[in-house]
Length: 278
Image (cartoon, rainbow, N blue to C red; front, side, top):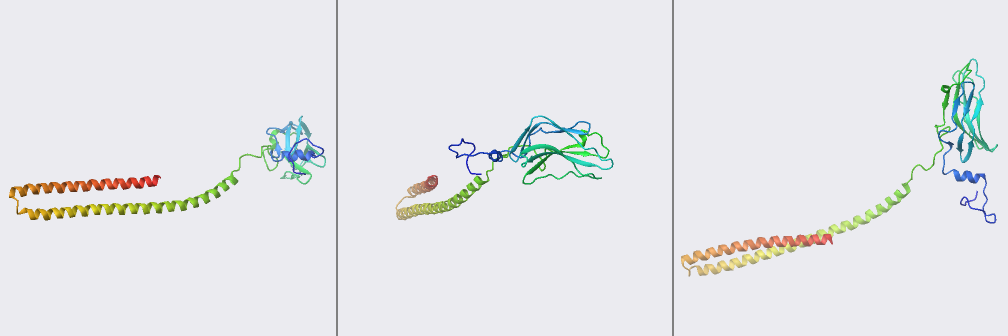
């Protein structure tokens, strides 16, 4: 079968469709089975069963059973039991889908016949009918509905039950791994740069504080030396008043030093914050 899109009109014989084209078109969309609630097998309280009408899809081949179908069951054994299958068969040799009863073997402990599934036959089992020895009438209790069993029949359903994101997720994970490695290097360099800037700022701050302290100490030493030379020339009262002024001046120096320290600290902290934000 050629690879082309379904279904366009033929243009000078460039499109050829057949029954298999329709089968191939249906396969990706619907599972094999019977449509929900259809083709049910019911007992008639005699040796017959009836299969209601409905639709089925078997590997892309579809049939609509418009009317119910009634089957006669073979007479029960007088001493042994058996299990018959109610079969929905796709027969590619007959080019049809049809209903049938497949008789099981007589046994003390019977088993249902195996399904036929080969190159030309594909069976679905609608139900099993247990026919015990001497049975003259089948009741609903003797029928096991197997339509919901996907291994032997199943309901027709959409094949796409959920979207598979595994391929997209794998692609994103690969991208994110590369991005994470890249940004990790940039982040490490950023931290190193911040550390160096912080160290430089701390060194500059320490240098300013030391310079201020050295200046204050030098000025205080000069003043004390001057005061010592002048001390003997002043009266006792004048000397006391001058000492008070000196103490007041020293207090002012200490306050200025503390204020300068706070201001410098705030400035450097702001500088580092602006650098990080920028």
